[in-house]
Length: 417
Ligand SMILES: Cc1ncc(COP(=O)(O)O)c(C=O)c1O
Image 1 (cartoon, protein in one colour):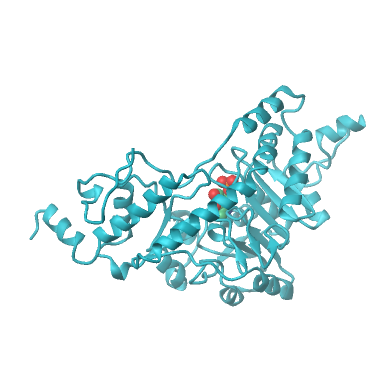
Image 2: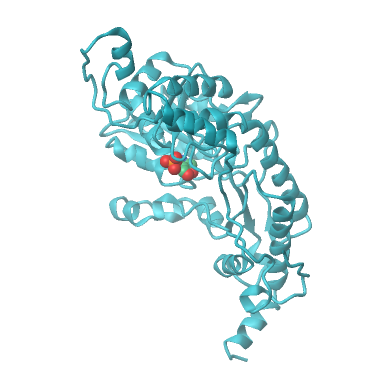
């Protein structure tokens, strides 16, 4: 049962009744009987890994995203590492990327012994700002790694032009953006290398898993070798051709995705269209509702893109609130919304801060956004009631922290005048 609070009600954090009785997560998977059956069949087959399901999943995925080739990996992180490797990034090189992302985007540059150079983001989409990228170019720059933050495609035309002028690789971290479109083209068929993730909070899942899409056959071959220890052929090819001989031609890893996971991927891929449609519906409901809530800035959508809505990150209009993001966050959690923050700018993480000398003041847009961001629950199996609860809780909490209101309540709670 769900409570039906009004804006006048006491916030749960102040002892009132929460909007929901149970915690609504910010993201979660949905699996049906077909998915379970597909996995069971794979378990009963001859191939648990690197068998026919891998080829089938890759072919179907490539067709889905409009790319010539798709190469599967054990995670989105492994996919990014492979993309960094395939682009030739190495010691002494730099790759320009965004600080508003999950650390894996920048980590893949470090795995290759290269240096991540952060450029600030656009104020509307929080995606890599091409103008800022052009200011960070150096003779050492080898790649640009764009992230389609929250599922909104980055400014790919401008970034592709920049990359083309300098002979750089454009890697797109589309771990948020499976199914997104940019100027009528599907994400996956635009950048040199596009990485995806199948983590359970994403648009479809294989448990853990990832993919790199590319139109370049040579890059695809390098990716396949990289995920298999750098070996030039796969066990099944050798079995089929009756050969035992293989050669390790580059230093790779075991980043293979199993047949079990690929069987799940094939089944999940069939639901991608419906999942995207539901996410777009939820985003439209939120955006419509938050037009009436001045303390909330809804995520921007540029013309000619169709985002995939992995996340729905609002920004707080702190000027219209009596508390900062930490208090608002805690108040939303108390209402049983599993809100989250995406992202702590990567350069702020102790590992990066300790190893490099990035300066927050060089990223004013990212810094400003970080103080205000809260990701609301967004996943395709959310019910109409879930969506309504989120909207109610956001209205309730922002009204409770309208200037002069909550601050007075907090003062009295603390025993101060
Ligand atoms: C932008 C971004 N890049 C990379 C990754 C890594 O993907 P995975 O968790 O599949 O390794 C994530 C994961 O959430 C992500 O959000």
